[in-house]
Image: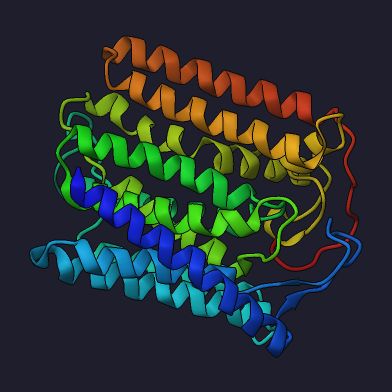
Length: 349
């Protein structure tokens, strides 16, 4: 527990303090997010905030992770570094946006598989070589899917960083519950890194994390979801836990994918103000209220994940079916809300 507190404190202090000079560097080099028709801010905002989150998180992980696990963690850090760099290059328009989705994200996912970090398909259903193939396939789908979801999720002040902090908190709690020191250290570091940055990123944001930061966060929470093991929870329902912890970005991606597909648009290549937070912000909630409501949903997802740990298989599956029905109902309801309907395709957003 003490190591977790120290890990959090180091990550928080490093992220918070490094954000200031990194913001100045971004302004000096002109690495800013310029307002346009699909942006909600009115003045150029410095990017590169993801570098502060990255530094705070990685410094804390390398400082407190046990030496016997350091090799695997260095591999995870290397994969996350690749995503950070590619994202920064994309922010600078030095790469085609499809390089992120079709090269960088799959390569990072393959790195995890090579490190032995993967899903474990329930042995009660499929065993042997086919089970291993499915493990690899689901791992690639999970990592690329969550990382891509985060790449289009960072669209409002404090949204991605705050939601990630909430998910990291529950990952840490569950890891401590199961005595998984490495995962708890990982989660505490990410919690500190995101909260330190959130002080500067909550509305009105002084700095954005950029694509590099968003992909870094997506990859890290996806990795946490793979590394968290719940041996006392039935295999038939344990898979629900990381899904519930990441319910907000998963729901947002589901909403925009369904909505854009219905309008004949390519889901990941049609930027616009049609995300969950955009639609909620068009109500009396406003931008800040929309973000806080999604924080509440994130906490609810974490609470349900803790509940799944105590339920039987039947009760857990009933809960899962109820959540799925709620997601579809929310998609239908939010489709009735006012939002800007884009008509042309562009980069990933």
